[in-house]
Amino acid sequence: MTSNRLPRHSLKLSFEFFPPRTPEAEQSLRATVARLERLRPDFFSVTFGAGGSTRDKTFETARAISAATGIEAAPHISCIGSTENELKDILRTYQEHGFERVVALRGDLPSGLVGAGSLRFASELVAFIRRETGAHFHIDVACYPEFHPQAKSAQHDLENLRRKVDAGANGAITQYFYNADAYFRLLESCAALGVDIPIIPGVMPITNRDQLLRFSTLCGAEIPRWLLKRLEDFGDDLNAIRSFGTDVTTTLCAQLLDAGAPGLHIYTMNKAEASAAIWQALGLA
Image (cartoon, rainbow, N blue to C red; front, side, top):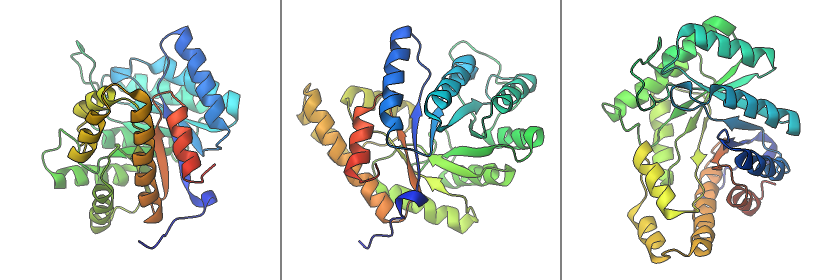
């Protein structure tokens, strides 16, 4: 395959974290951020819990990361479970503290929460952010190479992405996947629909078989049979799993970048080792 890889300065490279829940987890995340900061990503993103359950922690974590590193932080925002007034407050807080990038998602209802909130879809959230803040924010949205598990059809899922773009999204970050062809086909389908925003592939390092299975079941990401079987062969040998997982994800990332992917977004799970190993193997540091 002929490489179409963009030069390092043209790639959009980022790491994602979730807000820590304990003092020990906060300390661990600080160490992770300090290590990954040295790789000079374009931005760090911080997730937003179901129904806004980590609203304050998302803001605090993003602010702390930005202050500690000088690198842009992009807090997530989701609409499920939130009223329009609550969303206005969140956006106002983000603006007042200098955030210029957000990741806008529909989000999930946490267990026991009945009300879906004022806005039901990510496209409505994007339109709301544009109405309230104009062009202040660069807005990234989610998309799904293997399609959202709740999508009525593949075409319906693609049209949902187009609605988000029409509402004002600047870019998209994909759910993680391990089949490069799924990403390439997504790009072809988006081009046919006139969706021309940058679509950054999301990458999940493989460090724990059971954790990967659990996450993939929840989000609908497919684990290829060959990959699952190889992971089963390693049993409980975590070092072997991590080494193999780094090889697999590095190869996937190289395929994506060589075919012209505009960047990478790595789901770190608040750990630095696997993400840094992939970064170094790709020559992105």
